[in-house]
Image 1 (cartoon, one colour):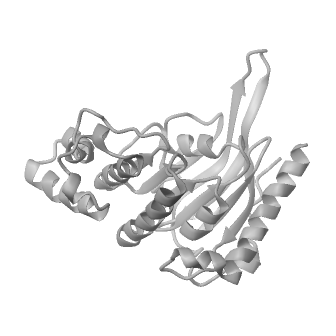
Image 2 (tube, one colour):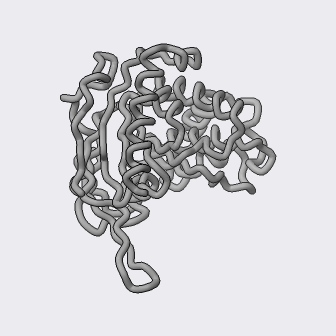
Length: 278
């Protein structure tokens, strides 16, 4: 089945990133197929097409197995599509690159390095001068609220603190787009709420383009300018919804009528998808 990219007019708002903005990310008719152990083929993604404008916070939601993470990994250049192309800043993705920062659900820090050393890792590999590295690292360590832990080793940190370091490390490299694969999925509910608020603040300051994967509908609406709802078997874009909630965002907004209506809309789309699958 081909992609469906119509924007639901019920959820168009002037607070969303402008549709006419030059796209930072372009996904053009991307398909991904795997060979199964029995020799057959499994289609994970089928002709997926969409664009993410510059500075937009875009969120992918969908049922388990719909290919959300696969699409993120293709954008990161960690895998190659079977068909189609992906462009970041007008350049075709042909492997990993510094123009894309990645934050995974699992904690991918180097445990033998300190917070500061983890954040400056990419900068050091690029040969940046020590004074410039220090200025950038100090800024982002402070941005994620870890100034007092800069010399702690990653293995001494809690899960939430480790994800703060991962976000700081990704942003320190000044990527064109930040890719986030359920970064708060392994955290307890209280820490997850704290991290959502932190990410909103950090993103508000950096205005980086973000592609964020989550299973959590509340999280998608709270964080996103636009929600891309995926259908499964094979994965595709089923619906695109603009979030009708002004920024800055706060947790009390989950009780607002517009929030509840959008949550019901997304839940209905996902429920229909699950009904079709069975």
